[in-house]
Length: 146
Image 1 (cartoon, rainbow, N blue to C red):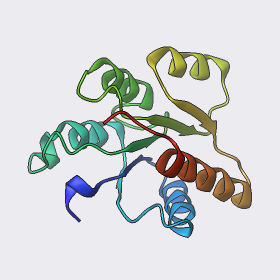
Image 2 (image 1 turned 120 degrees about the horizontal axis):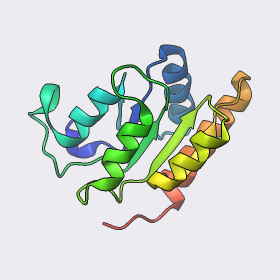
Image 3 (image 1 turned 30 degrees about the vertical axis):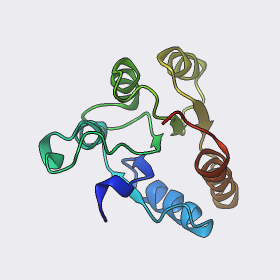
Image 4 (image 1 turned 180 degrees about the vertical axis):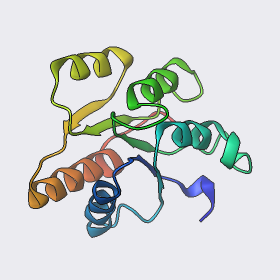
């Protein structure tokens, strides 16, 4: 897959949650151009075309980032802080998709510029429905600046 075709960047350290997310997006044909990275450090390398991703062009940005908060190396809040502070990446829609329902995480995410905050449902069917709805909205209905 060419990196300029990337539509969704999934940043998720939990393999089961990542697989469920990808399955839900594929169900609606929304995961054809998806890249999964397993921690915040790798996400930043991918987006800014550094480290493991120096062959990628920086201007080839994802159309949507699905971001977990609790991750090793660099947590989701720091990824969000960096993305929204950089003029090259601050317009990429970022949806926090996390198990955290803590008010402080919700408030901090919005203060940093997150576009949406979704707590992962525990039940499989609810999780699949939530991800499908997110994908349909952000990939098909939402209009982002070019």
